[in-house]
Length: 270
Image 1 (cartoon, rainbow, N blue to C red):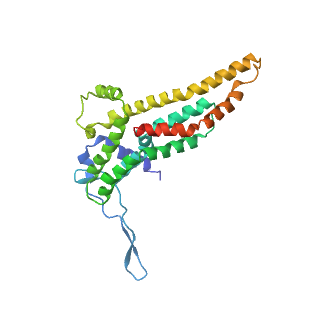
Image 2 (cartoon, rainbow, N blue to C red):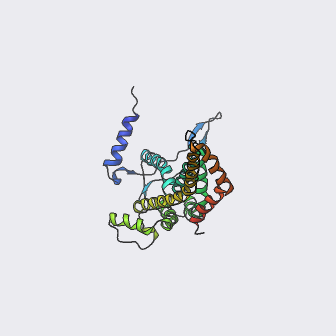
Image 3 (tube, one colour):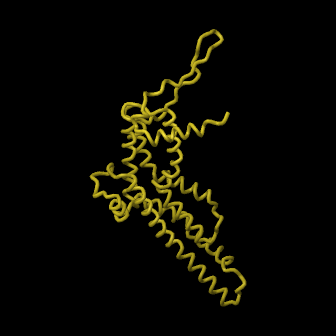
């Protein structure tokens, strides 16, 4: 028998796209605990229901296959959320420009740069994560608030962080294109307007810092190339002489300390 999973996927997609929410809403799924027959003839529970996130529409839950489909979609978009809604974008662009300015294409390795940028992102976003955990996640896990309220409360500190780092000109650009005149508070800012404005603001600052990083190394390259040409050593690649000089300059100035300090303090207003 042919595999029927593609057919099921097509059916679920058609239901999700073509039918209104009321047509696909149904009662909550029954308990997931299973029973097994023991040696004495009784039954015992072997699987307790796991705590999960319900995708609700009013007082009803969506069908379990649709919940799984939406959950997998969110998990697929999770890397994009981390990259585009946090400080990760600015950090990884700066580190990439620094590696190019030093003239080293493979060192530090890309994995190390991504790891460093990721953990610095956790450090910078720690106040936001703590606020989300206190105001939204913990009350939701203890059934004090609904899932809709938890999502709304979690979005407020995230939007506040992005608004603080977003240039007004960039935000006004997307507000004009979306036809939005203004908003009363942070909670009313739509993410489809705030996220692209935040990203281009982060890229702008990252390129500014990258330009400042390039200048001293560019001067070293020019000096080394001029000296080699004046000595008639035209067959010797200037990068072989300038690379160790740039590394020495970067180490003597404690470059990693200064770079990380300036970037991180930029998010805390220091």
